[in-house]
Amino acid sequence: MSFYRKASEQKLELSDLRVAAINLLSRREYSRHEIFQKLSPRAQDQDELEQVLDRLAELGYQSDQRFAESFLRSRIYRGLGQNRIVRELKEKGISLDLAMQAIEAEQPDWFELAALSANTKGRSLDLNDYADRQKLFRYLSYRGFTVDEIKHALEVLQTGAY
Image: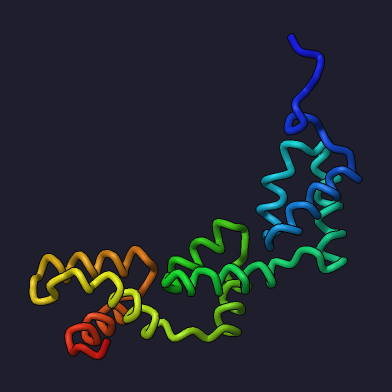
């Protein structure tokens, strides 16, 4: 039996919670929900953690809107569609309203993104083959594109515009 606890097992006081949260935020943007999930096992009291999170938001160190915008840009760069991005944002604790605000601010062309993703995947596929078209359709659907966006991407690929 050990008398010493590991650092990750120790319960943190208010000032230590603040430092831990700021350390997290110094690396990348986090949603309030993510920080709460990471720090709640180490908090002595959940109310103290809520107090720290409120103060960080008040000071502008943590912002769910800024997180949503940053997350959206990174996922668009990866070639993901709106459905998948919104689902992932929801998993990170971002409301649907805030996710839609970030999407409206960014104004991505989902049809163009679907075509680019299809072009990347579709190079090795024979689009005259039904099974390969279905494979590409499933791939784009998994990446979060709508049926209309996928149909547009398949048309663009078949016409050879890319």
